Image (tube, rainbow, N blue to C red; front, side, top):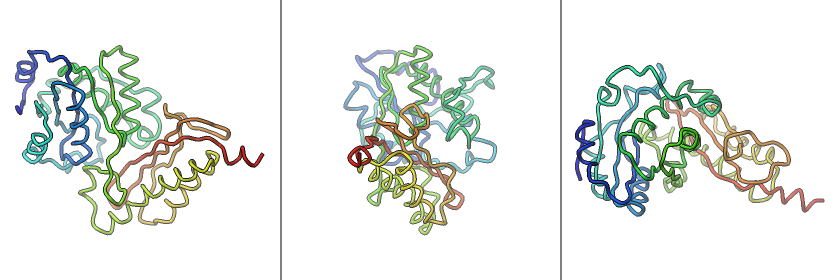
Length: 286
């Protein structure tokens, strides 16, 4: 496995094109969720490139850019163990040699949910994703389903801008107790971590309601009740949407996303589950 720090080194390493190249984009502080992305990439491509870059464009002025966990040596060891071929770990100046004037704007996707609470966040994400897609030139790019809004936005950007890459979503990896794996989990004190389980419990309650044929408002209420029972979680949002992030109302039938974000102490966490809304319970009543 090779570690590359500059554009020139990356271009040289990519000169011999394999039949199929995959990229996994990360900000480092890797956990099992990231490694599952790499394993999936390894099974689908002849060459796997992993990028490690803490992107300043996606952090707001009061967010955790400076304290975001960084452990390049530990990350490299983990990536070698799961079969990555190349690791591109550039500096900020290497990715942004000039302050960008032209950037990607997420449009309506960047105005809801995460966008409403973190203005400009998805613009920063899409800008760096597009730059890295150009630099790596992959056939497939893999992203975790935990960042569902990011996955929707990247897929839409690739389609709208005619970027020739397949975008593959990989299911969320969870701890044994249900907490979605996140680099930010390291910030949680033991009591905060216990409280954070309310996020995944709320989503599980919503899924049970959906599986039982409940209407959208009842699915949302089932999740909201669980979330409200944990005072240490301060929710930013709990939303039930269609796969493209549009809100769903009474009578909606089909696939849906139940998404949650909230703060536990000073740590902000997100999670989501995919559901199928059938309304079968109401149908049986009639």
